Amino acid sequence: MIDEELHKQFEEAVAYVNSYTEPMPADLLLKLYAYYKIANKNYDNPGSKTPLINAFKANALIQAQNISMEEAMRNYIDLVNNKIKKL
Image (cartoon, rainbow, N blue to C red):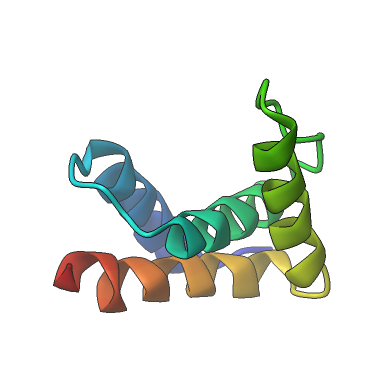
């Protein structure tokens, strides 16, 4: 079971990203995408209408496929705190 504090921090990080209005580097967005999908156990195919974007998203998921749900949450939180909040 996921620690309640970890889940709370993850939800706060997601809310922060969702409210962020400045452009972010594509590689950062792809990492956030992969960690978010893994943290939420959502392994559906990427839903973009652009095949190239789907390929990048699928690649990001493949690169992160061996991490746990908890680790994905921690990685997402770390990216938000150490990269996005410093942009």
